[in-house]
Amino acid sequence: MVAAIKFYYTGILQQKVDFNYLYPQGNQFKIPVVLDQMEVKKILESTDNLKHQAILSTCYGAGLRVSEVVGLKIIDINSSTMLISIKQSKGKIDRTVMLSQKLLIVLRKYFAEYKPKEFLFEGQAGGQYAVRSVQQILKNALLKAQIKKNASVHTLRHSFATHLIEQGTDVRFVQELLGHKSIKTTMIYTHLTDITKRKIVSPLDCL
Image (tube, rainbow, N blue to C red; front, side):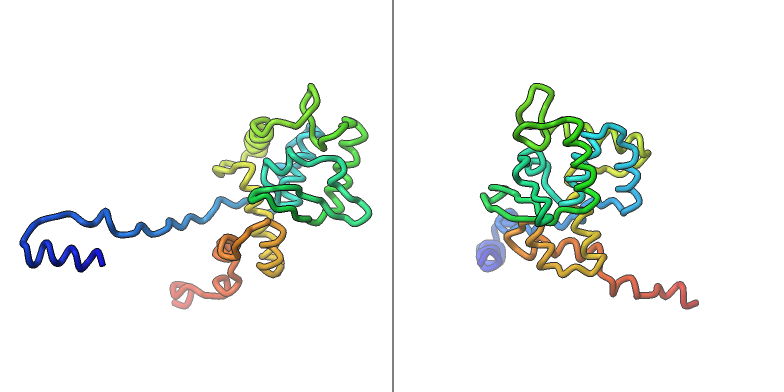
């Protein structure tokens, strides 16, 4: 329709009018920053503070958004079913994710030392832990681990999804774990992990 109007003005009326701004803008595709498993291990091992290690381990081990991590309550961790309940996350949707055995060990050590009352991770004065504090924890861990990627707390969630797909987990299960409404959102991780691409040999290697 825009092209027809443009032809009418420029081709018939001989008027120079710019209609380019009327064309729909295509969605930008950006591949997210992802840490490999060795980098994640270095980050966790470089975090000496038990509480900080527990927070980052929860971010990665369950693939949670930072808002979901600070919103976790003690009752949301179920060691008998090995599940974590995420209440009213993005889109006001409840979901459950797996509770890693290693994460459970870290959380038990953390709980025994810090004894939180309501929220799993609480500030010094009690109440919900601050999102900015979590971001600073990761920033410090990246520096200590000497990892120079432009990573954020959300990068741990990207890494969680990518590593699951690399292990062969069905993308639809990953979609449920991440709480994505659309499978298209989750499919971005297949661009990073497509096994068939790894089998393609560069023609340079055939010379």
